[in-house]
Image (cartoon, rainbow, N blue to C red):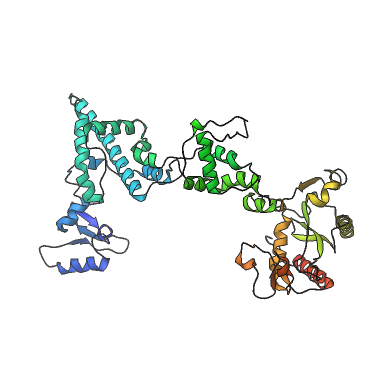
Length: 484
């Protein structure tokens, strides 16, 4: 913005580059070209050593002077009060309609400009009322003058800011918009009702509940087309649907027609698939893998605070029947050290062997048993009322029922599988690994989802598999801690 400097109106080089000159060298060349002329752009202060280059405002070409605006000439009284409303920019950028969509960049710019002009108009109105009162004048027709100034202000906006406002030019409609905004700077009032209607939420919470109740309890898995047909049958009165929460029948008069695409878009949302998929899916583990969130547990600060235990089968087969070795492991979550492990060809009796070995290890090391234990329910549920009761063998015991994501040890098993065991011959890849790096490769890896696939994997002797697993545990326990 032009400013006074030693009684000369000047602008800085930064205000001219790159808006009116491509680079500083182009500006300097233009200055040098007219240095000895009575006309042309003139420099009044060199730049450098912390100083800015200053250019005489009156020496600039007319188009640049008009664009920058001469503060000595007030062409519209709103210029004294106008500035971009930052709060409006934040509001419109974060605004969301009922269908969770936002405003386009074009509409954001439009509404920010309108809000900024209205704020300036409010300030101008207050100043004009004060001036008239102080001089004993009448306040009549002030809004008419404000409306006129706002309409003419578009010329200033176009010249200085390369934009325009879209406020009503009709005095009556302008007064309405002004009054709504003036009460509490309500930015929502400036958003077109047409946009709000176009982006309204068609599928309400009640309708979503109805759609879930419509087919969540069906034994088979209906297609989207079947859902649409059933919904149309319900609207026509041929089908009765019961609210699974209240037990009441839904009233068709409370609902409107829906397109197949609308039903598909909303039922494919993660939160709605949870309700429908759980009732109709026959694969509990796949359901939990898709929808159950991971536990977020604080990491213990001290060794001996809590151990996590579970069974696993290293991904190698030891005979032609595709059998794999069973291990039952325990890891201290504070030190990240494996504190107990037992193995066998079946799960029978392996859990008793594990707890016996756990006690032997801690007695041999001369330290107390951990304070807490987390485990799975499959092999441990039968001990929940005996030595796994809180306060018996451990102060606290948390038993997770068939929930792999609720036990921290699963993460360490993953590190063993993809960090140590993956490098060895005969490694069996998971059939649907999400990470490409964990999928079956061209060598030394075999998909284990189908019998005919796993049969192609080489047979690794039982003792070799056990020896490799024990060596992995030894290397793990002699490796650096992940944090300390």
